[in-house]
Length: 200
Image 1 (cartoon, rainbow, N blue to C red):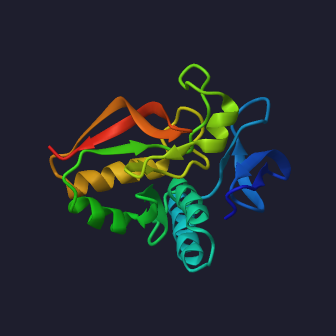
Image 2: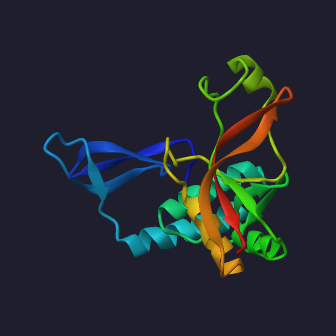
């Protein structure tokens, strides 16, 4: 499993497309006349088991927590269990699903979840791109998830898992979207659409 590389999917020896995050040559089935789309010819339970094994292996490495978070996102994409891999960053620390459950069980909320990385938005931000990219920092209170593989305007697998964990920790949990401050750049507030997790 490789967060920033890809393998290829082939159907009967014909290269069809890339498969992000998995190195190697994979069997697949062509899905369109242009031969540009394919699905993996691997049972979902086999892929999920493999992904779970990757989670165990990556958890034991000395890689940075942020990189391990990226691996967690990929593991979830393929239906695996993240085990000890971190899924969220909160208060400048990375937490696994179990650790996150333990932490928010003690919290009264509400909590603010921002999904993925943040990028300059010239319509939203009251500063130059240079200032944003140089000085932006997330507020410590913001819960944020890894971004790899999520894509623009899509909810990451880690965000779905984080919300599921919140619902287990808080049986009456309510989740709503809102525009909130997520950080600052050179003293200027930066707002984005977030998910607000309320205990009641």
